Amino acid sequence: MELLRIEGAIEHRRDLSFSDLGALPGQIPDVAQLLPGREGGGVRLQSVLNVVSPDETARYITLSSSDGKFSTSVPLEAVHDPIIAYRLGDEPLPSKKGGPFRFFIPNVEECAIGGVDACANVKFLARIELSQKPGADNRPTSKTTHEEHHTKEGHEHLERS
Ligand SMILES: Nc1nc2c(c(=O)[nH]1)N[C@H]1C(S)=C(S)[C@@H](COP(=O)(O)O)O[C@H]1N2
Ligand SMILES: [Mo]
Image (cartoon, rainbow, N blue to C red; front, side, top):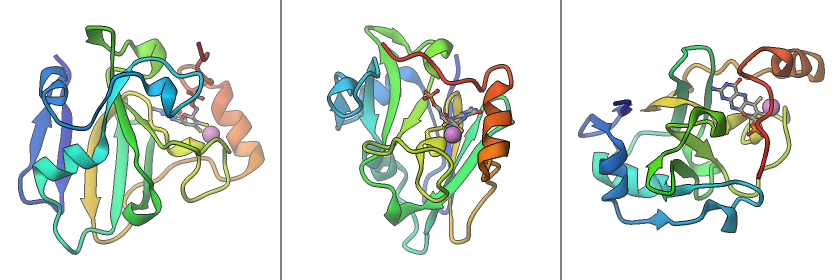
């Protein structure tokens, strides 16, 4: 069973399972209401943060994928109402949808604009780390490197429903 690790500048480090996420408040039964064209159910990041109690000094959130190949670090206060999608019906979100855990920032569609952009919607999310300083971020930053990025297997754009 895959777990979502929450660590760093927080009071309680946690490894959350599908059922742990399902037991939290702040459920989004249908993410399509906030993320047009996306499927599945999710939970608000805020509910997860409430469980781990971030330090007051935490300023950045770093999201890393389970394949170790992709990570993104953005200022916490710049990310508005993000969602962790984790289910499709009663089952874990499949990897073809970016599961078992997928980060989504509503109303952010544009790619490679830096900061809080669609590239920060990390698929196959395995680890969330809070920190005072920016963490690892290997998003492509130029148009060219971004296009190259999306030609790699597993990094192509996912089909929407
Ligand atoms: N694990 C992982 N997540 C990732 C990527 C990736 O290569 N690996 N690419 C990012 C980029 S650059 C973009 S633009 C979005 C694309 O998401 P979509 O295919 O669902 O539209 O996923 C992001 N999340
Ligand atoms: Mo992107």
